[in-house]
Length: 380
Image (cartoon, rainbow, N blue to C red; front, side, top):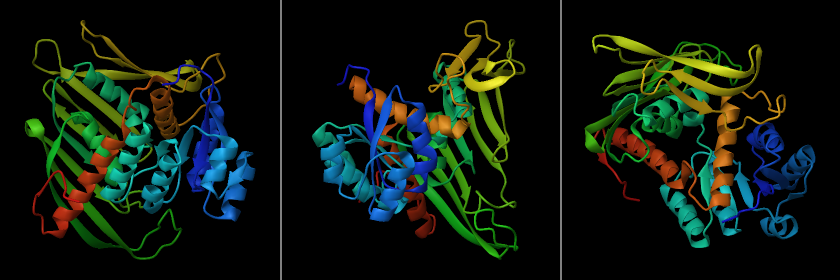
Protein backbone atom coordinates (compact mmCIF):
# COMPACT_ATOMS: atom_id res chain seq x y z
CA UNK A 1 0.00 0.00 0.00
CA UNK A 2 1.27 3.46 -0.92
CA UNK A 3 0.50 6.38 1.36
CA UNK A 4 2.27 9.34 -0.25
CA UNK A 5 0.48 11.53 -2.76
CA UNK A 6 3.21 11.97 -5.36
CA UNK A 7 2.07 11.09 -8.89
CA UNK A 8 2.37 7.43 -9.81
CA UNK A 9 4.66 6.79 -12.77
CA UNK A 10 2.92 5.27 -15.81
CA UNK A 11 4.05 3.51 -18.98
CA UNK A 12 1.76 3.03 -21.96
CA UNK A 13 2.19 -0.54 -23.17
CA UNK A 14 1.12 -0.66 -26.79
CA UNK A 15 0.76 1.78 -29.64
CA UNK A 16 -2.92 1.36 -30.42
CA UNK A 17 -4.77 4.47 -31.57
CA UNK A 18 -6.21 5.05 -28.09
CA UNK A 19 -2.68 5.42 -26.70
CA UNK A 20 -2.23 8.78 -28.41
CA UNK A 21 -5.67 10.33 -28.77
CA UNK A 22 -7.19 9.14 -25.49
CA UNK A 23 -4.65 8.10 -22.86
CA UNK A 24 -2.07 10.77 -23.61
CA UNK A 25 -4.47 13.68 -22.91
CA UNK A 26 -6.00 11.92 -19.89
CA UNK A 27 -2.59 11.39 -18.30
CA UNK A 28 -1.64 15.01 -18.92
CA UNK A 29 -4.87 16.25 -17.36
CA UNK A 30 -4.41 14.08 -14.25
CA UNK A 31 -0.87 15.25 -13.58
CA UNK A 32 -1.46 15.39 -9.82
CA UNK A 33 -2.22 11.65 -9.84
CA UNK A 34 -0.08 10.17 -12.61
CA UNK A 35 3.02 10.92 -14.64
CA UNK A 36 3.73 9.35 -18.04
CA UNK A 37 7.37 8.19 -18.13
CA UNK A 38 7.64 5.89 -21.17
CA UNK A 39 5.93 3.90 -23.91
CA UNK A 40 6.44 0.40 -25.31
CA UNK A 41 5.56 -1.07 -28.68
CA UNK A 42 6.35 -4.15 -30.70
CA UNK A 43 7.86 -2.27 -33.64
CA UNK A 44 10.58 0.35 -33.49
CA UNK A 45 8.73 2.68 -35.86
CA UNK A 46 5.40 2.71 -33.99
CA UNK A 47 7.15 3.00 -30.61
CA UNK A 48 9.27 5.91 -31.78
CA UNK A 49 6.27 7.75 -33.27
CA UNK A 50 4.24 7.39 -30.08
CA UNK A 51 7.15 8.31 -27.83
CA UNK A 52 7.97 11.41 -29.86
CA UNK A 53 4.31 12.41 -30.01
CA UNK A 54 3.91 12.12 -26.24
CA UNK A 55 7.39 13.44 -25.43
CA UNK A 56 8.68 10.42 -23.47
CA UNK A 57 11.28 7.67 -24.01
CA UNK A 58 10.16 4.78 -26.16
CA UNK A 59 11.13 1.10 -26.04
CA UNK A 60 10.61 -2.23 -27.77
CA UNK A 61 12.20 -4.12 -24.86
CA UNK A 62 9.94 -4.24 -21.78
CA UNK A 63 12.88 -5.02 -19.46
CA UNK A 64 14.78 -1.93 -20.61
CA UNK A 65 11.64 0.16 -20.12
CA UNK A 66 11.29 -1.12 -16.54
CA UNK A 67 14.98 -0.69 -15.69
CA UNK A 68 15.43 2.74 -17.22
CA UNK A 69 12.12 4.50 -16.43
CA UNK A 70 10.78 2.56 -13.38
CA UNK A 71 7.03 2.81 -14.04
CA UNK A 72 4.60 1.66 -11.37
CA UNK A 73 1.51 1.38 -13.57
CA UNK A 74 1.04 0.13 -17.12
CA UNK A 75 -1.80 1.06 -19.45
CA UNK A 76 -2.15 -1.81 -21.93
CA UNK A 77 -3.49 -0.38 -25.18
CA UNK A 78 -3.24 -2.92 -27.99
CA UNK A 79 -5.53 -4.68 -30.46
CA UNK A 80 -8.06 -6.76 -28.53
CA UNK A 81 -6.66 -10.10 -29.71
CA UNK A 82 -3.31 -9.16 -28.12
CA UNK A 83 -4.75 -8.11 -24.74
CA UNK A 84 -4.10 -11.47 -23.12
CA UNK A 85 -0.46 -11.87 -24.14
CA UNK A 86 0.58 -8.25 -23.70
CA UNK A 87 -1.37 -7.88 -20.46
CA UNK A 88 0.38 -10.92 -19.03
CA UNK A 89 3.74 -9.54 -20.13
CA UNK A 90 3.06 -6.26 -18.32
CA UNK A 91 2.02 -8.01 -15.11
CA UNK A 92 5.01 -10.36 -15.22
CA UNK A 93 7.20 -7.27 -15.61
CA UNK A 94 5.85 -6.12 -12.22
CA UNK A 95 3.32 -3.48 -13.25
CA UNK A 96 -0.09 -2.74 -11.83
CA UNK A 97 -2.16 -2.58 -15.02
CA UNK A 98 -5.13 -0.92 -16.63
CA UNK A 99 -6.18 -3.35 -19.37
CA UNK A 100 -8.25 -2.45 -22.40
CA UNK A 101 -11.33 -4.53 -23.15
CA UNK A 102 -11.88 -7.39 -23.15
CA UNK A 103 -9.48 -8.45 -20.42
CA UNK A 104 -8.59 -11.27 -22.84
CA UNK A 105 -10.44 -12.87 -25.72
CA UNK A 106 -9.73 -16.29 -24.21
CA UNK A 107 -10.72 -17.02 -20.59
CA UNK A 108 -7.59 -19.08 -20.01
CA UNK A 109 -5.52 -16.00 -20.90
CA UNK A 110 -7.61 -13.92 -18.50
CA UNK A 111 -7.00 -16.47 -15.74
CA UNK A 112 -3.26 -16.38 -16.42
CA UNK A 113 -3.22 -12.59 -15.98
CA UNK A 114 -5.29 -12.75 -12.80
CA UNK A 115 -3.10 -15.49 -11.34
CA UNK A 116 0.15 -13.69 -12.19
CA UNK A 117 -1.13 -10.47 -10.59
CA UNK A 118 -2.25 -12.29 -7.46
CA UNK A 119 1.14 -13.97 -7.06
CA UNK A 120 2.86 -10.59 -7.32
CA UNK A 121 0.26 -8.68 -5.26
CA UNK A 122 -0.45 -6.38 -8.19
CA UNK A 123 -3.71 -4.57 -8.97
CA UNK A 124 -5.67 -4.96 -12.19
CA UNK A 125 -8.37 -2.63 -13.46
CA UNK A 126 -10.09 -2.95 -16.83
CA UNK A 127 -11.14 0.02 -18.96
CA UNK A 128 -14.80 -1.02 -19.12
CA UNK A 129 -16.15 2.50 -19.30
CA UNK A 130 -19.74 2.10 -20.52
CA UNK A 131 -21.32 1.76 -17.06
CA UNK A 132 -19.05 4.57 -15.79
CA UNK A 133 -20.51 7.22 -18.09
CA UNK A 134 -22.22 9.97 -16.10
CA UNK A 135 -25.78 9.13 -17.16
CA UNK A 136 -25.22 5.53 -16.09
CA UNK A 137 -23.46 6.43 -12.85
CA UNK A 138 -26.35 8.53 -11.54
CA UNK A 139 -28.73 5.61 -12.17
CA UNK A 140 -26.42 3.29 -10.25
CA UNK A 141 -26.25 5.82 -7.41
CA UNK A 142 -30.06 5.86 -7.24
CA UNK A 143 -30.22 2.06 -7.23
CA UNK A 144 -27.55 1.91 -4.52
CA UNK A 145 -29.51 4.41 -2.44
CA UNK A 146 -32.52 2.10 -2.50
CA UNK A 147 -34.77 4.51 -4.40
CA UNK A 148 -35.98 1.77 -6.75
CA UNK A 149 -35.83 -1.15 -4.35
CA UNK A 150 -34.62 -4.45 -5.78
CA UNK A 151 -33.95 -4.58 -9.52
CA UNK A 152 -35.52 -7.69 -11.03
CA UNK A 153 -34.70 -7.48 -14.73
CA UNK A 154 -32.25 -5.54 -16.84
CA UNK A 155 -32.11 -4.90 -20.60
CA UNK A 156 -29.40 -3.79 -22.99
CA UNK A 157 -30.94 -2.82 -26.32
CA UNK A 158 -27.91 -1.96 -28.49
CA UNK A 159 -26.27 0.14 -25.77
CA UNK A 160 -22.79 -1.24 -26.39
CA UNK A 161 -21.46 -4.39 -28.00
CA UNK A 162 -20.29 -7.69 -26.50
CA UNK A 163 -18.76 -7.32 -23.03
CA UNK A 164 -19.65 -3.58 -23.03
CA UNK A 165 -23.34 -4.31 -23.45
CA UNK A 166 -23.20 -7.17 -20.96
CA UNK A 167 -21.54 -4.84 -18.43
CA UNK A 168 -24.26 -2.19 -18.73
CA UNK A 169 -26.95 -4.86 -18.31
CA UNK A 170 -25.22 -6.43 -15.28
CA UNK A 171 -24.58 -3.08 -13.59
CA UNK A 172 -28.29 -2.54 -12.85
CA UNK A 173 -28.63 -5.96 -11.22
CA UNK A 174 -25.41 -5.44 -9.27
CA UNK A 175 -22.03 -6.86 -10.23
CA UNK A 176 -22.16 -9.08 -7.16
CA UNK A 177 -25.24 -10.90 -8.58
CA UNK A 178 -24.07 -14.25 -9.93
CA UNK A 179 -25.03 -15.31 -13.49
CA UNK A 180 -26.23 -18.89 -13.79
CA UNK A 181 -27.27 -19.66 -17.36
CA UNK A 182 -27.12 -18.09 -20.84
CA UNK A 183 -29.29 -18.72 -23.88
CA UNK A 184 -28.15 -17.07 -27.09
CA UNK A 185 -29.12 -16.57 -30.70
CA UNK A 186 -26.82 -15.08 -33.34
CA UNK A 187 -28.34 -14.48 -36.78
CA UNK A 188 -26.98 -13.07 -40.02
CA UNK A 189 -28.99 -10.89 -42.41
CA UNK A 190 -28.36 -9.04 -45.67
CA UNK A 191 -28.96 -5.30 -45.68
CA UNK A 192 -29.64 -2.83 -48.48
CA UNK A 193 -26.55 -0.98 -49.75
CA UNK A 194 -25.92 2.10 -47.62
CA UNK A 195 -23.14 4.22 -46.18
CA UNK A 196 -20.78 2.66 -43.68
CA UNK A 197 -19.62 5.59 -41.57
CA UNK A 198 -16.44 3.78 -40.56
CA UNK A 199 -15.28 2.60 -43.99
CA UNK A 200 -16.85 5.36 -46.09
CA UNK A 201 -18.22 2.81 -48.58
CA UNK A 202 -21.75 2.35 -49.97
CA UNK A 203 -21.49 -1.40 -50.54
CA UNK A 204 -24.07 -4.03 -49.70
CA UNK A 205 -23.73 -5.04 -46.08
CA UNK A 206 -24.31 -8.07 -43.89
CA UNK A 207 -25.46 -7.64 -40.32
CA UNK A 208 -24.86 -10.02 -37.42
CA UNK A 209 -27.55 -9.72 -34.76
CA UNK A 210 -26.80 -11.05 -31.26
CA UNK A 211 -29.53 -11.78 -28.72
CA UNK A 212 -29.21 -13.29 -25.27
CA UNK A 213 -31.18 -14.21 -22.15
CA UNK A 214 -29.07 -14.37 -19.01
CA UNK A 215 -30.52 -15.95 -15.86
CA UNK A 216 -29.08 -14.74 -12.54
CA UNK A 217 -29.35 -15.98 -8.99
CA UNK A 218 -32.45 -14.87 -7.10
CA UNK A 219 -34.67 -15.42 -10.17
CA UNK A 220 -33.35 -12.22 -11.79
CA UNK A 221 -33.03 -11.77 -15.53
CA UNK A 222 -30.85 -9.96 -18.04
CA UNK A 223 -31.68 -9.37 -21.72
CA UNK A 224 -28.98 -8.46 -24.24
CA UNK A 225 -29.26 -7.29 -27.87
CA UNK A 226 -26.64 -6.02 -30.33
CA UNK A 227 -26.06 -5.64 -34.06
CA UNK A 228 -22.68 -5.67 -35.78
CA UNK A 229 -23.54 -2.48 -37.70
CA UNK A 230 -24.68 -0.61 -34.61
CA UNK A 231 -21.77 1.85 -34.63
CA UNK A 232 -21.89 3.06 -38.22
CA UNK A 233 -25.23 2.38 -39.92
CA UNK A 234 -28.21 4.68 -40.33
CA UNK A 235 -30.37 1.56 -40.32
CA UNK A 236 -29.45 0.70 -36.72
CA UNK A 237 -29.46 4.00 -34.87
CA UNK A 238 -31.36 2.86 -31.76
CA UNK A 239 -29.79 2.90 -28.28
CA UNK A 240 -31.59 1.91 -25.11
CA UNK A 241 -30.97 0.37 -21.71
CA UNK A 242 -33.64 -0.42 -19.12
CA UNK A 243 -34.28 -1.88 -15.71
CA UNK A 244 -37.47 -2.96 -13.98
CA UNK A 245 -37.43 -2.75 -10.20
CA UNK A 246 -39.57 -3.25 -7.12
CA UNK A 247 -40.50 0.44 -6.77
CA UNK A 248 -40.09 1.79 -10.29
CA UNK A 249 -38.13 1.58 -13.52
CA UNK A 250 -35.52 3.37 -15.58
CA UNK A 251 -35.14 3.66 -19.32
CA UNK A 252 -32.66 5.38 -21.60
CA UNK A 253 -33.75 5.86 -25.20
CA UNK A 254 -32.50 7.68 -28.25
CA UNK A 255 -29.66 7.40 -30.71
CA UNK A 256 -25.95 7.10 -30.10
CA UNK A 257 -25.38 10.71 -29.07
CA UNK A 258 -28.82 11.91 -28.03
CA UNK A 259 -29.93 9.89 -25.04
CA UNK A 260 -32.98 10.68 -22.93
CA UNK A 261 -33.20 9.14 -19.46
CA UNK A 262 -36.61 8.61 -17.87
CA UNK A 263 -36.59 7.33 -14.29
CA UNK A 264 -39.84 6.81 -12.41
CA UNK A 265 -40.95 5.60 -8.98
CA UNK A 266 -44.33 5.36 -7.30
CA UNK A 267 -45.82 8.73 -6.55
CA UNK A 268 -47.14 9.63 -3.12
CA UNK A 269 -50.37 7.71 -2.59
CA UNK A 270 -49.08 4.74 -4.60
CA UNK A 271 -51.48 5.32 -7.48
CA UNK A 272 -49.33 6.91 -10.15
CA UNK A 273 -45.76 7.40 -11.25
CA UNK A 274 -43.41 10.17 -10.22
CA UNK A 275 -40.54 11.11 -12.50
CA UNK A 276 -37.07 11.68 -11.06
CA UNK A 277 -35.55 14.86 -12.48
CA UNK A 278 -31.89 14.75 -13.50
CA UNK A 279 -29.94 18.00 -13.42
CA UNK A 280 -26.47 18.34 -14.91
CA UNK A 281 -24.52 20.93 -12.97
CA UNK A 282 -21.75 22.66 -14.85
CA UNK A 283 -18.98 24.79 -13.40
CA UNK A 284 -20.91 27.89 -14.46
CA UNK A 285 -24.56 28.50 -15.19
CA UNK A 286 -23.62 29.08 -18.84
CA UNK A 287 -21.41 26.00 -19.19
CA UNK A 288 -17.90 24.83 -18.53
CA UNK A 289 -16.85 21.35 -17.37
CA UNK A 290 -19.34 18.98 -15.80
CA UNK A 291 -19.23 19.13 -12.01
CA UNK A 292 -21.98 16.70 -11.00
CA UNK A 293 -25.38 15.24 -11.77
CA UNK A 294 -28.15 15.80 -9.24
CA UNK A 295 -31.18 13.51 -9.11
CA UNK A 296 -34.25 15.18 -7.58
CA UNK A 297 -36.30 12.22 -6.37
CA UNK A 298 -39.34 14.01 -4.93
CA UNK A 299 -39.04 11.88 -1.78
CA UNK A 300 -38.93 13.50 1.62
CA UNK A 301 -36.58 10.87 3.06
CA UNK A 302 -34.00 11.15 0.25
CA UNK A 303 -34.85 14.18 -1.91
CA UNK A 304 -31.44 14.39 -3.60
CA UNK A 305 -28.95 11.80 -4.84
CA UNK A 306 -25.68 13.13 -6.26
CA UNK A 307 -22.98 11.81 -8.57
CA UNK A 308 -19.77 13.85 -8.59
CA UNK A 309 -17.48 13.97 -11.60
CA UNK A 310 -14.33 12.13 -10.46
CA UNK A 311 -12.09 14.20 -12.73
CA UNK A 312 -13.47 17.60 -11.79
CA UNK A 313 -10.70 19.70 -10.28
CA UNK A 314 -10.45 23.06 -8.57
CA UNK A 315 -9.60 25.93 -8.86
CA UNK A 316 -12.30 27.05 -11.23
CA UNK A 317 -11.25 26.85 -14.86
CA UNK A 318 -8.68 24.09 -14.33
CA UNK A 319 -10.82 21.15 -15.47
CA UNK A 320 -10.86 20.04 -19.10
CA UNK A 321 -14.34 19.99 -20.65
CA UNK A 322 -14.32 16.28 -21.43
CA UNK A 323 -17.18 14.41 -23.01
CA UNK A 324 -18.84 11.58 -21.09
CA UNK A 325 -16.74 8.74 -22.51
CA UNK A 326 -13.47 10.47 -21.63
CA UNK A 327 -14.72 11.06 -18.08
CA UNK A 328 -15.57 7.36 -17.84
CA UNK A 329 -12.16 6.17 -19.07
CA UNK A 330 -10.39 8.59 -16.72
CA UNK A 331 -12.47 7.13 -13.89
CA UNK A 332 -11.17 3.66 -14.81
CA UNK A 333 -7.61 4.94 -14.45
CA UNK A 334 -8.37 6.65 -11.13
CA UNK A 335 -9.87 3.40 -9.85
CA UNK A 336 -6.50 1.72 -10.43
CA UNK A 337 -4.56 4.62 -8.90
CA UNK A 338 -6.73 4.57 -5.77
CA UNK A 339 -6.40 0.78 -5.47
CA UNK A 340 -2.61 1.02 -5.59
CA UNK A 341 -2.56 3.86 -3.06
CA UNK A 342 -4.96 2.29 -0.57
CA UNK A 343 -4.42 -1.43 -1.04
CA UNK A 344 -8.14 -1.93 -1.71
CA UNK A 345 -9.50 -3.55 -4.84
CA UNK A 346 -10.45 -1.55 -7.95
CA UNK A 347 -14.13 -0.68 -8.26
CA UNK A 348 -14.67 -3.00 -11.27
CA UNK A 349 -11.59 -5.16 -11.62
CA UNK A 350 -10.35 -8.24 -13.38
CA UNK A 351 -12.91 -10.75 -12.08
CA UNK A 352 -15.88 -8.63 -13.18
CA UNK A 353 -14.27 -8.13 -16.58
CA UNK A 354 -13.76 -11.88 -16.85
CA UNK A 355 -17.44 -12.49 -15.98
CA UNK A 356 -18.62 -10.07 -18.66
CA UNK A 357 -16.49 -11.84 -21.27
CA UNK A 358 -17.59 -15.26 -20.01
CA UNK A 359 -21.26 -14.34 -20.44
CA UNK A 360 -20.63 -13.13 -23.98
CA UNK A 361 -18.71 -16.29 -24.90
CA UNK A 362 -21.52 -18.39 -23.40
CA UNK A 363 -24.02 -16.54 -25.61
CA UNK A 364 -21.98 -17.41 -28.71
CA UNK A 365 -21.63 -21.02 -27.55
CA UNK A 366 -25.38 -21.34 -26.94
CA UNK A 367 -26.15 -20.00 -30.41
CA UNK A 368 -23.63 -22.37 -32.02
CA UNK A 369 -25.42 -25.22 -30.26
CA UNK A 370 -28.84 -24.23 -31.68
CA UNK A 371 -29.93 -22.24 -28.64
CA UNK A 372 -29.12 -24.80 -26.00
CA UNK A 373 -28.90 -23.05 -22.61
CA UNK A 374 -25.29 -22.94 -21.38
CA UNK A 375 -24.64 -23.16 -17.65
CA UNK A 376 -22.02 -21.01 -15.97
CA UNK A 377 -19.20 -21.17 -15.18
CA UNK A 378 -17.93 -22.27 -18.57
CA UNK A 379 -15.55 -25.21 -18.73
CA UNK A 380 -12.26 -23.99 -20.19
